[in-house]
Amino acid sequence: MKKNRPQISIVIPVLNEAKGIAQTINYLTANSSPENIKEILIVDGGSVDNTTSIAEHYGARVIHSEKGRAKQLNYGAKKAKGAILYFLHADTLPPHDFDQSLIDAVEEGFETGCFQMKFDSNSLFLSFFAWFTRVNHEICRGGDQSLFVTKQLFNRSGGFDEAYVVYEDNEFIGRLYKSTFFKILPRHVKTSARRYQERGMVKLQYHFGIMHLKNYLGAGPDQLYDYYKRKISV
Image (cartoon, rainbow, N blue to C red; front, side):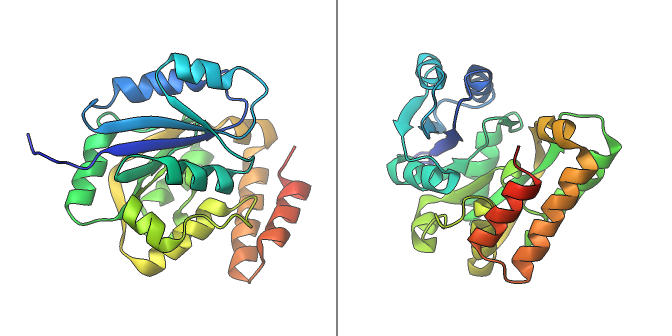
């Protein structure tokens, strides 16, 4: 076994995730090696259910942050103890031995990247869009694919822009693409299709596309959030 291999801090921002957080933590523990995982770090943005007590019961480290994904992600990165930061949504599950894939990538010289993505749905429509996550272009990226970045690169990059209430993942990844090579790992995370099923697959994908277009045309964080509130948020 190699000595002094970098360890991973899995950073998961949460808000009222009591229903599924135990399953996620158990899955991460069962599908990784303990010597590779420094911590599962739950960054709570003010949950009013028992998310935090459940997370602690199942072995995660819980810290408390101001509400807002960018703020929670930045605070998690600041407090993380691992050399590799792995940002993960609470409803996204990485592949078996994901930790080995991340460490191997970093040891090969890749400072940042993500897995490809599949939905937990048989929808051909969603499968079509998920297929594009194998394409190494920033337009094909999103937080649902998870994101790994060395803590050194995260600090150099300045982290997430907290002016973005939404679209913070895309904005940050766009900057990473400009600063270094972004690695697409060959395996897939599986993410929940619940939001698409609740709000309409075509409708929601259309609105996400418009947000990408608005960003490309120069819309700022306030304009993107305004569109999100009007068209996507429930």
